[in-house]
Length: 224
Ligand code: NI
Image (cartoon, rainbow, N blue to C red; front, side):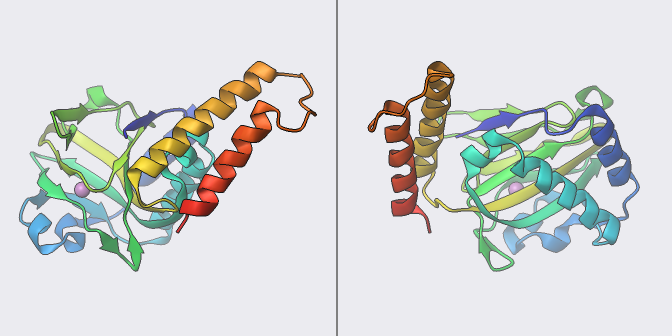
């Protein structure tokens, strides 16, 4: 399942993240790619530094504060996060992300776009679905969340510079179908809660409590 999520940062915070990212030091991105992916990878990634860790911590906190992200990914751990930069024709050809990184399993991938789309050309994230290629090119501060088992690529950036934070999450639910079911259930519970409004649902077995019980018990059964 794909999720496009905006509103992670207010304008002031977004500007601060953009400025911090542009000021980082970068190195060849092939360093962190697996042997097969490295053959098609051409970009730069921020060198580890306190400033980079501050950006990553800020993005991680913003994601965890976004209900749709938490509902879609059910994050158990952030396995790895990177700050990437593409310019001068750089691209990342079709590849699949590693299943395991830094001792964690990658279930869910995300890309947080940081550069306004009119400030560069190309640079779309293209994710291969079973039936079609899906092009994702978002506004600054918007994030796409998608399953880590997909083939995907980043189109050449032919003008300007494209900054993004990319990352991988180990989910409590390794099966994307289970994540989709619980995402739908979250939506149903939110709708029912809004509908019930101020009504006091004290009666035992009220729909909202029953739905919450089912959600809790599915998570208990499936979480790993
Ligand atoms: Ni990738």
